[in-house]
Length: 124
Length: 139
Image 1 (spheres, rainbow over the protein chains, first blue to last red):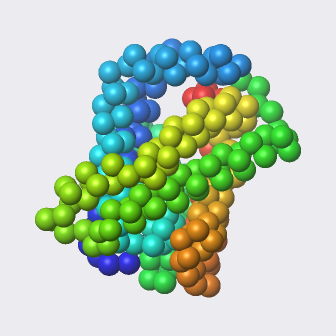
Image 2 (image 1 turned 180 degrees about the vertical axis):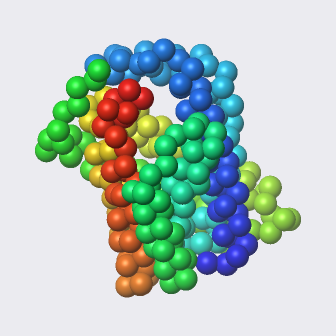
């Protein structure tokens, strides 16, 4: 995987991570949803569509997608997709700092495995 | 507090279906990128590439599948815990390379498969750190 595409993938993931944090903040600002039936899910969808922060998230999704597509232009999907799992690592770090979520050894261990796997795939 | 159901066969198949849909969407995204005829992104062809790919029907099929899949996942999350759904969902990292071999004729080496396997173990570990009580409170 060329450095240029790796950097484009990182930009994609930065947008993707910002998107996830913003969406989570938007969803957290809502009343706690009750997912008891599919109708509850539809009500939840209606509620999130009326939250301005969620729309900021949607714009970030679009930005993240554009950069993902540029990666796909130059990289095989069977490489780009596994390397994209670095997103888990980035989101976890962002959740720790911006959403004050816990960090524990299972998460850290998982992150080490993901990074090791990504290095193997990217160099294959 | 939400009562979580165990992973039944029915739910397992729904998740497997969602995984296949998501993988299919990625194949359509890649097909859309291929349809642009641009194989190397530079500062000069960045914008023309974006315009071209968004006018590719392949890409829109992918986006349509993606949105449908999002709704399907909402239904899945209403049935089972995130810590169960996530590892089963990470199967896309195995399905996508398989689809890439079949539909895009990519050559997936043994080293690449090994890397993918290690990534899946990592995702499994990450998902297991969620305390069930906390997951319920946040759901």
